[in-house]
Amino acid sequence: MDKLIELMNSSLLSGAVIAVLASWLTSRARNRQDQQAEIGALRVQADAMTVAVVELQAAVAANRLLWDGPAERARSFLLAVMAAADGAARARIAGGTHAQSAQVGFGRAG
Image (cartoon, rainbow, N blue to C red):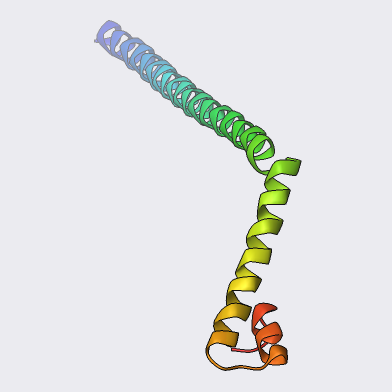
């Protein structure tokens, strides 16, 4: 009977050690898996951020090429002059005075 009790105590002790070890290994494996998932998600986010930055740089370069040149400035100035002349002419046709047509041309009167 003593042998049986001693055997049972040793098997309970070894079972407890095995249970603790299995629990520790399981939690460690889960933590490692979670860490790997977080690293993967961060890599995806970093790739998306890199693509966004490159696209923004390309948009800035295209903007400079298309809109910041002297030809575009001249076109914008010509468009503003034509809009002012159009407003002044419409005001003059509608029976306004020279002063009123100038104000309409410069956008000061409606």
